[in-house]
Length: 320
Image 1: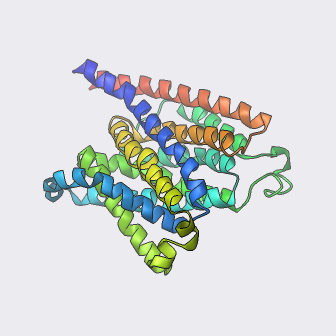
Image 2 (image 1 turned 90 degrees about the vertical axis):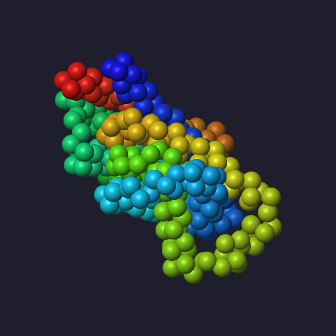
């Protein structure tokens, strides 16, 4: 039993990283979709298609719903609202109005939020050197994000920060909190049910948001730009919902089930690294030399964070 637990604890964070990396591919589909749809409509269709994919799983797990505790429902509602709906809208807007590479690396602020949340809600024990290497990772993320760091003191805009940066920061805030809420969900229900219900909650939120903005009608849900490129629009939406949506969601939740929320937040930075590869290689949003160096430092810091946290978790298992 001890050996099994150790194996789960060691590969759990890497499942989180794999799921996050697949999420990182969404820039390849979401950026061209921004030319065809409003950001809120993109997220709405994304949830519709993911729910269709997850519908067989949801139906097979409906019998578990009466056993869900109110506290777990609270975590689920917040996770679906903050992560699936609102956070994704701001991410889509950030890609539309900002440099896609810069936008993606700004998401490295997520671990700070998820670490604080995990400490407050789950009393996760942190290694003594945790904040040192976490701080290095965050500082490196800042240097990756800023094109001209020497100009920060003069003007954020001249340093390369714009409205896209602001949207990315808001997205990081919601996604960071959703990470912690997701861990709370996994404590109270099965992986398959949690994954399916999060999509239901996200779609419900998106329907209310689209209605509130007066876009729940044919002309807005399938605008002229999409009508002119119907095949392209459908293909991009399907890829977004499957390769970058439903599949990584299952992998991510399985990893989160085996991982502390404080550690999971740092492995979610794999989403940023995968996205940068796409935005740089496909959309030619290149990085300056100092940004490349900062990215390498970030990767090393995340690896060290994983190692020091593993030592803490191993000692706790021994004490138990």
